[in-house]
Image (tube, rainbow, N blue to C red; front, side):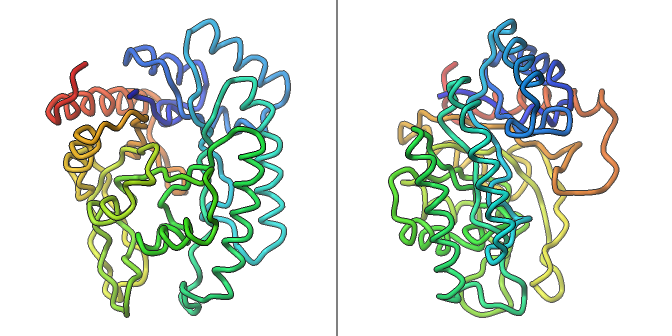
Length: 303
């Protein structure tokens, strides 16, 4: 078991990301954003510099937190699928060079309000496209880790299980995000939908979980229980993400994967609001990591 995180929340510059990781005494980064680019879009020269920085610091990248099939991509638009294919194919040689065996991917944007998320026709499209992505990963020795975010699989644990069954491939595993259920509705049954329970979601999919994003927050459902509510993100264990219960359950059942910090205290990567000053970002990330270490000890982890 190991600790890692989206170090871009500490700073955009990769040197800052490494510095925060080293200050925590950690060895790993889940890479998402490096100076406004990602692993697939860096120039060759920029990528070479990243490799040099990692070697000099003794830090490794354990997961590529990609935008593949994410909440901004429509499953019906061929251009969006082509963009996901390109991102994956461009990243693969670099993942191989760095020894990265896990890519964070999703299952395309949640359907619009006027379309049923359980449409067999839509599900067929999603499952087919995700399977193509998973097969490419499998051919290259990579696990496609699906995150329960603002996507089809994130609509509920039922949809995640349906995705796993529909894609039906051993290289499709789950990245469970403890905080995302806090501000997403539970699309099971008929509206009005309640907000999801992180514990319920986790409990129903845990046998497929290979990696965990640590996030927490508090949100209240909107009046129509349809529009996604604003979430106040908190330190892990202080929101409605059932972080302590989930971490305890994982440890008691021999979990040996990673816990990846995604604080969102100063930076939210799908939010266009003004972001925090650099020193605040840095300190929030380091503080978040240290507080999570304390939570881990409370949950029974022996360092």
